[in-house]
Amino acid sequence: MQYDEIDLQVRERDGERRLEVDGYFRPHPESKPPEYRRHAIFDLTEQQARKLYDDLGEQLDAWD
Image (cartoon, rainbow, N blue to C red; front, top):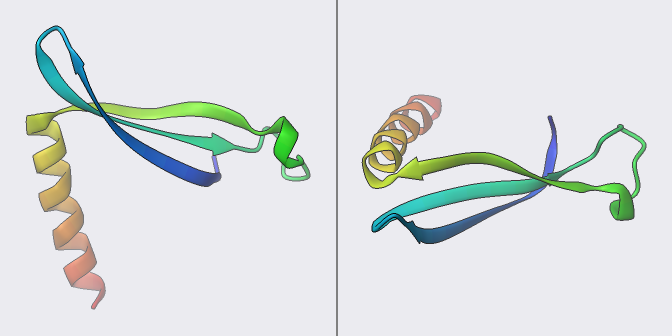
């Protein structure tokens, strides 16, 4: 899926903070903005978010 916009929100659920990432995607390549749909990409605990942060940092450093 190709996302045109990605948003990050911090929410608390069951007494735990979670990072929610969602975005708008086009159902078809020729779709116009009114047809875009919001889609959850992932929902992370703090521990998962920290691991993803470390992994992304390593990958980005390798690109330099």
